[in-house]
Length: 330
Ligand SMILES: Cc1cc2nc3c(=O)[nH]c(=O)nc-3n(C[C@H](O)[C@H](O)[C@H](O)COP(=O)(O)OP(=O)(O)OC[C@H]3O[C@@H](n4cnc5c(N)ncnc54)[C@H](O)[C@@H]3O)c2cc1C
Image (cartoon, rainbow, N blue to C red):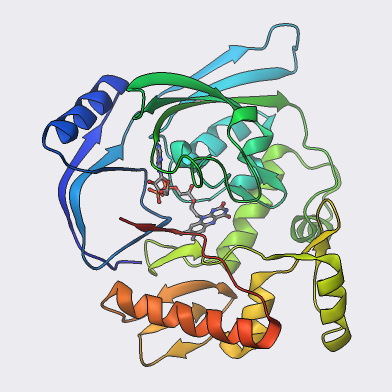
């Protein structure tokens, strides 16, 4: 977002030893620590950070056969690797499992934090385990995917254990061969338009990249941090009630009688489509109102005012409270 104050201290770490050393240095100086990857999903407060910011630069890539499963492979990646580089590298080898998560900005190590996902795939589907430094026990630990508390855009690292684990490595299980349908509707439309019937992982990656490039602003050029809110999950009864007033409201079912509503649709209906707010200098992205862009805001406090305007009107109109996706730090 190109907003927020500075940090007092910053260090880049390239391996587990350097990470441990940086954390003990901060402890000796009684400073709080924040570990970041690419910083693409963080909103920094105006006050800045009176502590040590550790930038994860742990690089590593290794493939390993899966015993008894000739069509599968384990891929171990360092937390500091650029996520899209990993997707490109595995896709080119005809491995399927993460190709729909192409072009998501940031590092591999951040993907489990909010269970990153896009176009029908999420990291929880392919993660076997991760390695992390546990700042509570001061030990390196292996955490199995089943113990990560994954949910829709969430995990234990974002909730109960926020800030406790510094992720150093991921172990993914990918499969050789073509991805299998059903594909995410937007991707299927793209394939239909091009007359593609039996897509490879590379075809899906190309489709996703083309779709994303038309819909999403490039954070290098236009300050943004991706989707600003998660898609709200409602009781089926509540959403059926809403349909009476909004018969064209998009929605899709999740488990146990719950229904998900696109936050973008709610924001649009609340009057914030392609909206520029003169008071704060913030705007919604013309192609996707769920993305906030910084046109000429100077302070994070202005972003917060803009955010509250949208939350308040959506709540007033639909009785739904939107929940923010990017992390606010410190
Ligand atoms: C244009 C755009 C499009 C996006 N599209 C998507 C999308 O389709 N799907 C999606 O899920 N997300 C999307 N995002 C959000 C973002 O890309 C992801 O959340 C990504 O995983 C952030 O990676 P990062 O390395 O930049 O993390 P950062 O922003 O640096 O950190 C995010 C959080 O993770 C923590 N963290 C980072 N690394 C570590 C580590 N090694 N150990 C412990 N904690 C860590 C940080 O403390 C912080 O709380 C998008 C963002 C942008 C800007």
